[in-house]
Length: 330
Ligand code: F6P
Ligand code: MN
Image 1: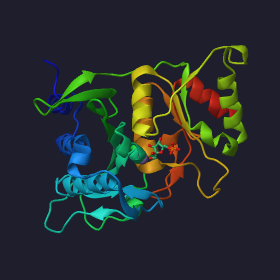
Image 2: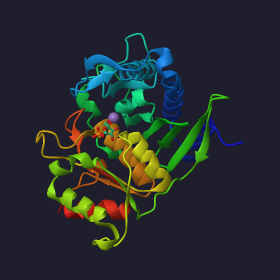
Image 3: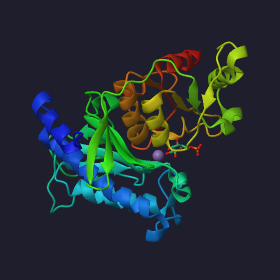
Image 4: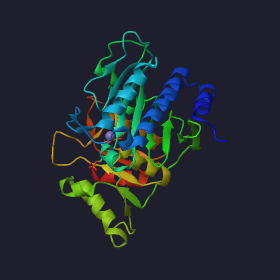
């Protein structure tokens, strides 16, 4: 029988001196995502589809499930005893641990439900998380304390709610995948030390925005589209699921490059995706799988954050392709 997530985490405590409070938090997150997974699987039966009629801090319309997943994640994390505070895509500021609950040495950032536009059409969505050090456990955590570069992450991962529910995790010791067995309620390890090929013939970008992109991205994608008869001398395939979780999951499983570039429409927005709870955790997974992740100029993990909800251009996946599109920005 395959190894459970709990056993993997226990092994990491003994072989790599991973703090049991960190593994405790990850086990807790896995349990929490099981709850979200169940809600997702219920869909219309649980009355959770559709819009909530509100907007989040990014000015995006919130779906009912965005709000439900956020509440589940917030409650679970702040009651876990392992965190000093949490931050989420769905909340303007950090959320503190209630006065009567224990605090711990970690900060958790999350996108409770990534790929929201897929909720109502029964296509893959996910929860993304990033765990940072909080120093000595404390209360009244300021938003600024979360502003640590992706290199400071202690653990990162996502849970994808697709045909299977899978948890993909890194502690900086490779990328491990676990599949939820709904018969036993356990996550079992189904892939270990995942590695992405350096080259690929598959790319993902929302081409409907092509006319708004900057010149380097226009050039790169035009060359991909030219295929065998163009400068790249090979045909490329394209995919777009519209959920970053699903794009990264595909890349970890069969390679590729994913891009969400900045564009000319709103100069105040350097991209669509959020650095702290989308780009950073995903970039760390990709680097751990021997891929690369940049904003076109520097490695995403090296960016010094300035805001909890700051946006960033993202190019991630197969090393050769990410290096090429990055070189076009120079
Ligand atoms: O979280 C933002 C997000 O939903 C990502 O998951 C996804 O990659 C992207 O936006 C989809 O963007 P678009 O609406 O342009 O397809
Ligand atoms: Mn998202």
